[in-house]
Length: 197
Image 1 (cartoon, one colour):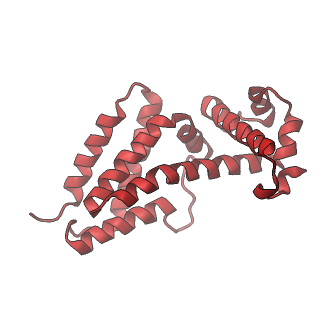
Image 2 (cartoon, rainbow, N blue to C red):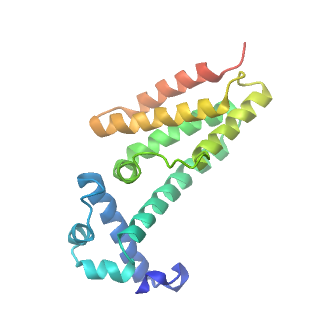
């Protein structure tokens, strides 16, 4: 099967076909849930057969792994540059919250699929990479005196939970104004983190 070949060995057509199957998998998972997202159903969405998907992906697990990798890469590519452009720790916090919700507004299906694939974070004992990045700028803010003294792990987990809650709300209420929602979160966490006047 061709799924073992490296990305550099794949033709443009093969890469485009893989991209199509990833996109179709996202749509099916977002609409029907992870358990109902069989290769046959994904193939039907793509207008092809299950065997064609198997030519590009060893099995459903490999396809789902690619779905998650693409979603994480997309989020990092969207949020990362905005965070890098922010100056102070307070600006990084604002940028992080706003850019996550802007990404959600633009990529609802992808984030819903991710939630349905991974409803709970893995119990590894280690913080998730995005939580580590949040902890880093929170700690920087404390060191610079912008932020008050608080447990950065608790604050990072709380920020992540607030963003996860926004996804839940957006799934239940697609008309939700995420710009206003982001503004409320910025106000909330600005008050929660700011140092003494």
